Structure formats: structure tokens, C-alpha cells
Length: 173
Length: 329
Image (cartoon, helix red, strand yellow):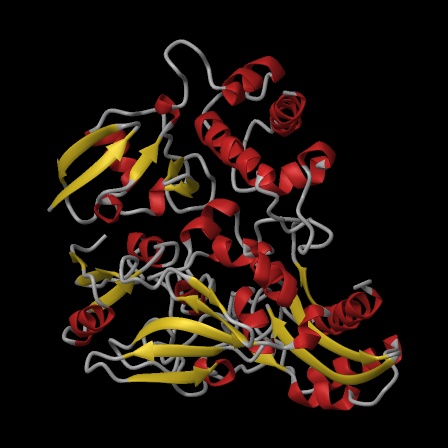
């Protein structure tokens, strides 16, 4: 079947099998292998991409269901040679070891920061009626908000540090 | 994955007709259950009808109720300022489940219709009356640590996995649907999910092709003092071993009315009405809550590995009521 998907600001007209996931479409059809296949069953977060501004799992998304939607992958995050602040923070904080989960971690973290700035609560927010404040966000909040991305190298402390660095820099600026 | 025809339609009745016309057709919303189960051949629809572009994606707030479209995502509900303010238990329940990525995909209707996480249901080589009627149940004498102790039958002990539904049942939500012929109806939440009984494969009170359009929650001023508590094996991204949703209406330290919903321990979203009645007029003490917990679990039936859930659920009930009582509003 035919579908049209916009990926990193480029529209692709695709002829796909209805069974094709967005993950396989990105990797095998479009050659965008930055998005990783980990568990392929919605458990690990390695395949995280951003669709219409929201972080989602591309392994549980049918490519055909993405008709007309805008997908951002790790390849679309930098501006030319200038890294996105979250990419730079992961480098600065050494937020990875093997790197396999890193594209998903970074895309998830970009959205997590946006959600914090929007003030929305998480499971560990004491009172869901109150907006969260990025300046006083606890590490427990960051960990909860990033719990959809597993890292088998257990680089978690440095991932938390990277998210915290981006939050702190944005609060300062 | 079996081959299927993918359809995307623009009107709810067209989507209902498309599914109603084919026994092997299913609705697709966020895909977090359906695509997952299609990959492991537990669900094998021949037609998949995408329902996310039917105009069922808004949250409409009025003075006396809130109407949540079927295709609204779990995140949109949990993060909505009016939900957080009027029905904190609903926001808390949703936020306790899965991860942000999954909540961004999963829809309200899809959450209500999500399937059990019973490992025998998810394994096509195992026997499961829910997946294959009459094939028997491998969970009864298998690894049943995560299984239900309330609402069980000799044919199925699968736990209903939803957190959101526990809040929905305690808030007496109504599920609104449309059928292919355009007729609509409203199903009270407590009548929506069916205990397994002799027909575990019949899980909900919907006809084939009947489409959920929206959920309505009437205002409940007491729900400002409401809370959801979830106990699980790890701090995040895990299904409940036991969970409880409460609404507590206090007059000083006396209980006017209490509502209690239970999750993680029952075959369907569970409302403990007798336990609720026992609290009316009592002092909001831990002793009263413990008495209610004993009533709520009086009918519990454990198997080899899930006996611990009965006491765990009782303590969860006492704790969640105490947290709701002690919350400063």
C-alpha cells in the first residue's frame, strides 16, 4: 500500500507492506539506521522517535499509520555540524558506553525536558495539581521520566547528569 | 505477523461498519497492545481499521462533567489541568503505568480494551481459555505469581493489567459507543468488563464492530480527595502486584462516603462496594480502613504463587486510604 511520511523535514512517498513498522521503514527502507531495534516489542525504548512532537516507540507503530505525520529521528536533531544541546550534554557527561540505546535516550530526553518546561507531572510528582518546576526538579523525577529507555551498560547516572545539565543551561539562559 | 488489510476511515460509523462486516477485523488505535500481540501471533486480524482520525481526539470540559474522546492519548488525559484538578486519582493512575513513550501512543479506549499480560495468554504454545476457548488454563497450576485472586474462575485467573481502569471504575465513568447502524449507547464502567466465568474469551460488553467514541466522567467534588497507590516489583515501568484507587469524602475525621477500586489482583477492574459501605459514618482511622480491607479481600482465592497478594492488597488499601485522609487540600 502507498503511504506518505515526512521524516526530518523530508517527505517520502513509500509503497509498503501493511505489516511494516515505522522502525523497519526508517532503517530498511529509508536507510536511517540511527534508530535502533532493541527488543522490538515495546519494552526497551531503543527505537524511540518523535512523532508530531511526542516521543513514541517506532517498533509498535505501523508505517501505514504514520501517513501525513512528521517523524524526527536522531539524524534530524543536529543543525548541520552543530549538535543539539542534548547530544552535546550526552558527550560532555559521558552519558553512554556502547551507544546502542543512545539515540533513543537522547530523543526521549529532548522530549522529557520539553515536558518539564510544560510543567506536566510524572508518577513521582508529589501533587499532580501543581506544575513541576525545572529549577527544582529532583533526580527521581528525571529517572522516572526516562524510565522508558533501558541502558544495559547502566550509564544511568551520567544520563541523568546530561538531562540535568540541559535543564540547568536552559534555566540559566 | 499475519498479513492484513489496513484501512483508515474518516467517520466513526464507517469504521464500525468496516469491522462489523468482517469477523476477523479489529480496530487499531495506539497499537501498544494490538501491534505487540500481532507480532507474536496472539492476535491475527485480517483487517485493521485505524480509528485515530475519526474526530474522537478532544477532551471537552463542562461544569458538570468531562468527556474524553476515545482516541485521546493516556498522556493527554494525565497531563490535562482539569483532570489533575478534579480527578487527581485518574491522573495518578495513568502516570503510574508504562512509560511516557507508551502513554503518548496508547489511547483511552485502547487502555480500556487492553489485554491481559498473563504469560500463557501471550504464548501461542501454551493453553489459554482466553486466547483459545476450551484449551484449558496453564496458569492455574503454572507460574501464577502475578495472577488474580478476585473474580477468578476455574477457567481463567488472568489479571486485568490497567491502572487507568481502576480510577475509571472508582469515578463511575460511562463508556459511550456507536454501532455500524449509527445507534449509540452508554455502558457504566462497572458493567463494561466481564469476569471470566465459563467464557474467559468474552472480556467486555461490546458487540463485534461496536466502537468506543468517548468516556464521560461526571463531576464528583469528593474526588479532589482521591488517590491511587500502586505496589510493584520495581519503582517504574511495571505492572501492579496490587493497586488501589480511593475517593474519600470526609466530614472532619468522619467518613461520609468512601469509594474503593482495586487493580493488579482481579480479573477485571474491581470495585469493592461492600468495603466502601462498611466505612460510611466511621472515623477515618487505620482500624476502619483495615476492616474495610478485610471485607474487600474476603472472597479472595489464591493459587500456589500468589497467596502474598491477599495481604499485600489489604495493606495497600489501608495505606492509600491513610494517604488520602492525610493529604492537605
